Length: 104
Image (cartoon, rainbow, N blue to C red; front, side):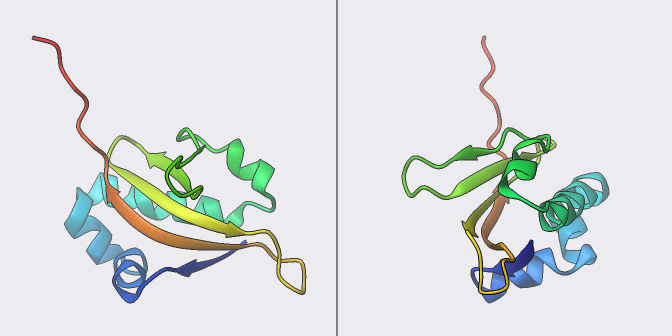
């Protein structure tokens, strides 16, 4: 699949290891970078479903979301095919993973 980005800010963040590391630390930044590579390497939508990270649809707009090691969520859309049959993933946002609630 080809990866495109929804805006310049997201492209800049995701295309530079130094920015990923500055945002999520070395371990988290590497995990986000790896997940983007895994998404790009997936040959089909079905292959995306086998990736770790609880791939799911966003009920508000139908886009896809996948968690990255408890540090981030990648939100993206999938174009079901271009003229040459290649799928295109458009990364809309990479956001911090919300902290889980703890019981007191």
